Length: 166
Image (cartoon, rainbow, N blue to C red; front, top):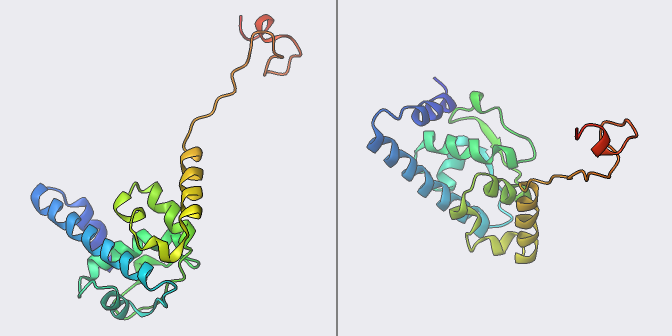
């Protein structure tokens, strides 16, 4: 079974709620500490074997949890990884797009990550505010209300009140 499969199985195995909650909380604490290291060392060289990288980021041999981290960061790196083929000896290079990472943290609703003070090292506060605003705007529903006397959106050329509004 691959490390990625182990990660997915841990997430799906919620039969014991307490055990599942403890696992997820442990993941969140490792994840937060890893992002703090990455942001403190910005720009940080993130390459090496999966095992070395896990050790460098503080996962302390928790390869299943490290796979969860890779699963989360994968959408924010220049060359996404084939997660199913990663072993402890696989060579990994993470070239992080920090703005995309910040956006994706908003997408994941991970406020414990996008509110880290260490972001000041990677992206200035004005740019972070702009990204957060763009994210909020992208999630806002917009509707163009057609007025009664406007041309009908069906393209008939008639007023909306004399066409599809009836």
